[in-house]
View 1 (spheres, rainbow, N blue to C red):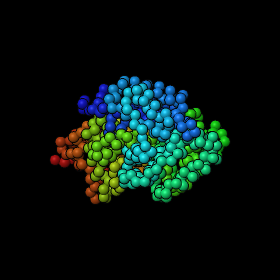
View 2 (cartoon, rainbow, N blue to C red):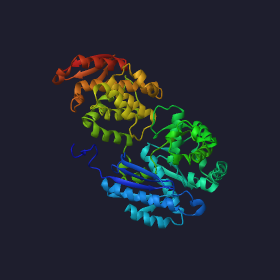
View 3 (cartoon, helix red, strand yellow):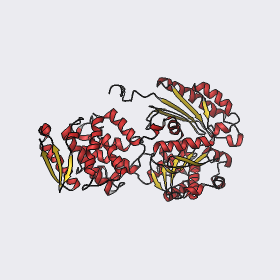
View 4 (cartoon, rainbow, N blue to C red):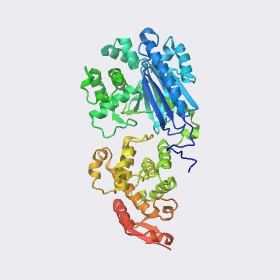
Length: 509
């Protein structure tokens, strides 16, 4: 285990990977723990330089913006050195590839960053955006759109296959520049550009994956407007009609200062927000998708995805994250896997059945069910719920995320805990009754299992649970008979009640 875990809560076997993203609006460095299926950022910093602010009208990168960007790159190089990053990648997008002084900037930028800077074509930028969606979601099917300061990249994703793609000059800074900051003129420009995409009708009835800082700001405001219980951006899914209505409202608003939650948006980002909302509104009216799914995974994560070998790409990002987290925070990851197998017997006939995705979520919950063991016993449930609900999980929607959080809350506090009615009222309102019931059952099962295993591997796999007639039977071999006791029986009775069977404990030979 010491070979897998570092001294500071990191997987020491991984080599840090840095990605510098030089966009039309911001310059950002993200250092990931390693090139893996569920990459965890060690460091993330951006500087809003505005390189593309006047490229459309002057054809050049602004001199002041260039100086800020070069200074940022020099700092990023120093940070990478501190974090022992040997593999530092750098990419540049629309503003740099279109500016007449783009090559000059690249020469200065490469010297400052200490690494080669790749200028992405529009097609390559769209491909990276799509790969970012593939990194963050399972079986993505729809249109991915990445809105930057200079351009909008669109690409069709289906079953991990990249299809039609296009790049349009609809970035927020570009629209401000070309229209003289006139929103009505920007509407005409946007509609004309979208009309050039012959394949845009293929998005009807499918998901639209929204990538980019301006659109994330829009989503953050929408969360505030609707009192959404989570402030987690990745996987935030909203019906198309609601996003259209909210985007149109932002586009028409004369003073953003009157929009609730606007103080949470940086002043630099507010400038492009109405134009980003306009592009979102007009695009959705053309695409007619069933829903909008916001993603924090974009071209940087897409670059990392492209570096992965095929066997790593095929892994489940949710299970990978939970296994890594279990190794870092649980008493035994081996025991976590045993819990997943032990609870399999509960979710088969004549007990409650589950879909393949529900089984996947249950296994993920088992993997991270012990991450709160170091907390004070009185607060393990609440702290675990908060940590899981807001973790950097990929490959999961918000309903699944809340199921995981509730299951682990019930694992610590009990499925019938009175506080849960108030503590998780907003969360439980966002999941189905079926999911809530499954969370209670799983929480009760893990509580009972820990009375036998004491959190250690090699025990519960010898103490099976099964259905026989109208009973839920726990069969304890004679070698483990001493683990029987009042507390175990109370917890097992609770579990049996959750699945609707009579409890029976048998001490075998």
